[in-house]
Length: 255
Ligand code: T3D
Image (tube, rainbow, N blue to C red; front, side):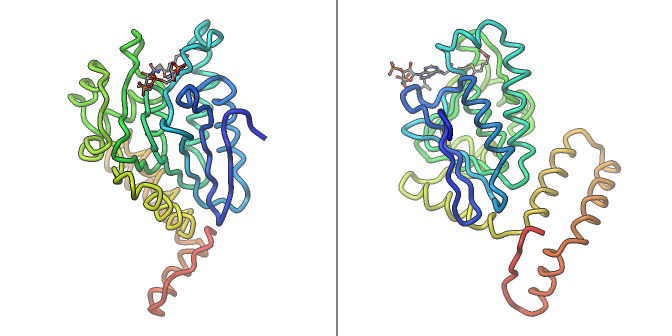
């Protein structure tokens, strides 16, 4: 069992819940290792993972009382943050970040590493780093300018102000800001959809979009051809076409 997270599994959906509510789910070494391990060792029949937080915060970023981390930040980022983020961006199922409350610093960028971010309307994202004289890390300087453009990325990072979930959705930084009363139901509906969908197609979407950041059109056409050829050989593609022609709902298995 875990010290800093709680992991539950039901109906093909694994929920990974950050569980240090007394510090707004701040990231310490144990939590970074446990998050990485949870995403790397998802239960066999997982088809969707949901990352969320206990209490009123999603995650407040680096635990600022963690003296050990402060000693050698470069090592901490390379040996603990990078594997954690790689476990999420490389998860073998689609990942939803369900941002239940404030997401600050590396906590915000942890959420943005997911495939789909759904935030409750009262949540805010804060690129808090420059408030303590650091710069954004945990992938923020990669993902944010690509999502919102340089002007907004710089404003977020220089002013370090809370960005409302609604503004984040309007800017294209997250998928959806859901009214607080509907948040849990919307997350559950999206998780249910992804957990019964064509998993390999979802991962190909992720791979292609990730590759697009560095490719020109010709290179990206080749990525599409390679990934699509793999998908065309899957059971789910056969099922998808058969269901369409049979005018029935497809029953995808993730194979
Ligand atoms: O160092 C390295 O290894 C480099 C890596 C850096 C990555 C980073 O993430 S740097 C950025 C670190 N995070 C922050 O700077 C955010 C710090 N937290 C806040 O700004 C605020 O707490 C929030 C905006 C998240 C929430 O504000 P509010 O007013 O709703 O709550 P609060 O009262 O500030 O916090 C509640 C408690 O959580 C409080 O403890 P207390 O007084 O009840 O005993 C507070 O100290 C604690 N807490 C919140 N964030 C952290 C934390 N404790 C440790 N580390 C935190 N990051």
